[in-house]
Image (cartoon, rainbow, N blue to C red; front, side, top):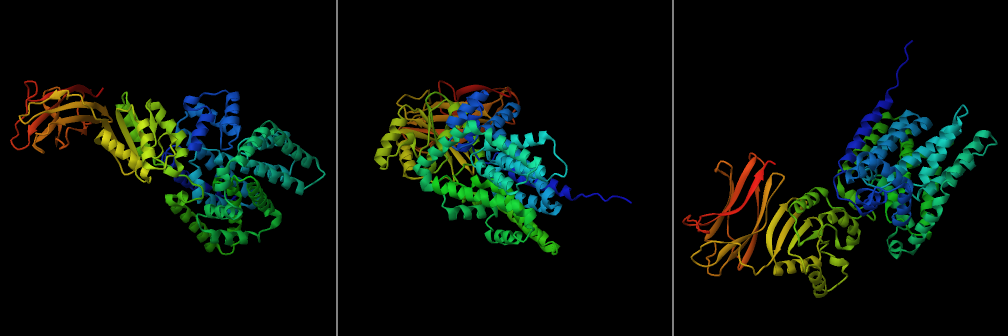
Length: 619
């Protein structure tokens, strides 16, 4: 008689692929967040490392404002040593542990309740838009969720094993408990749950005492970090801002239900009610997990407010997925209804994941600028920068500009130029426009050129208007160097009294130009910024310029024409010429000025064109 293979577990593979794809699309979607900055810095990444183990311990103990534990930074440092310390690598670490959490949850559910519940729990986790979002967050939350599932699974496996487990498995539980506690202070609630679960099943057996020893040793290993945790708690108790912005008990429950269910709280409650009818002997640990950890969060938050965001409750995602799966499994006699609910949950989760508004509207969520245009602008600035440049980057709403300070330094310090946010230059708290104008003038006093990076969906206040006023009155606007749907990059050059570097023989008066910046080739495009000086007598619109790139064979390779701006005494124009398709070689860039009506060229130094620069392409 043939044994029929059980292949239901194979459904886990496409579900993991789906979760991986949904989260992977976010890995490069937005720029570094302030908390992620601390992840890189405390793990000794980028310009802050590498750090020794002692250095990571000290940096985590004194420098992490978010309460991440040192184990996270140790594992992250090892990961950086393996794959590098980019923002992508940081987030990939979270992505991997998010998938491992889902996979291990399947194993836990399969061991306790069978494959049907296990598959349902995987569907529920893969259909959580909030969890998918935190699979791209460069913090410890997915590692923490994985460790929670690992500790619960190991404990139950050891407790209920038919044969006496080997001693090394108890040691593995001890190490897992220690790692959990050293990852985030919220894990203390999970440790309390495991202790409650063990005491509740008191037995005068060798196994019970071995398990107790394993749990106690894991807790004892945490003693060196207790003082640091208490310091974090004391800092939190003294932060007035956290007291004002933390959730109340009702908000904690509402945000937990809202974020886990993708906004479908009614469906979640129905399924949890149905789960109460499952056999308590088998499902009681899950209810204890949920209730004890949630009560600990609510009680501690009432004494020392810390719940400024729902992410701290991600330790409850696995158990909520288990309980929802149990509720769905109660419909075992109605197979099509059960499958329909799973499909609906998954489809809603996918749709919510693809809808940024859901995450953006979560309690305490702070805006994160899209990365594509932001990073492209930085590359353009880096390629064309020079002494005297100043960067104004508008990528965070006024209310949350302090959260942008560290990401701002991360991205802009390597440029080697001063940089500020136009909404809060110099962290100014000036309220009136005149007061703020003085702060802006003081900050820009030595700036010869201004790069203005603007993320378009970030609202502006009157502070940006003050900055624009100063730019209009003291600088020449050279136009947009980059224009995208998500961001723009504009260049401003300081007004100068110096004569033009290149003068043309215009019969009506002075007409000349100065190459303010460039030519510079970046990613197949030639960037050139010219300052034009026109006398008052030069007729408006009469003269045009033709920028011509002449190839090695003397033939015209490409050109760009535009009318000289009718702005006196000077104007600035930035031009972008595509050169990526041109063959390699040496080229000459000329500027020709001609009469738009007759086509006659103006002479320049005895010639009808001015050589701006010789450049090499294809090198």
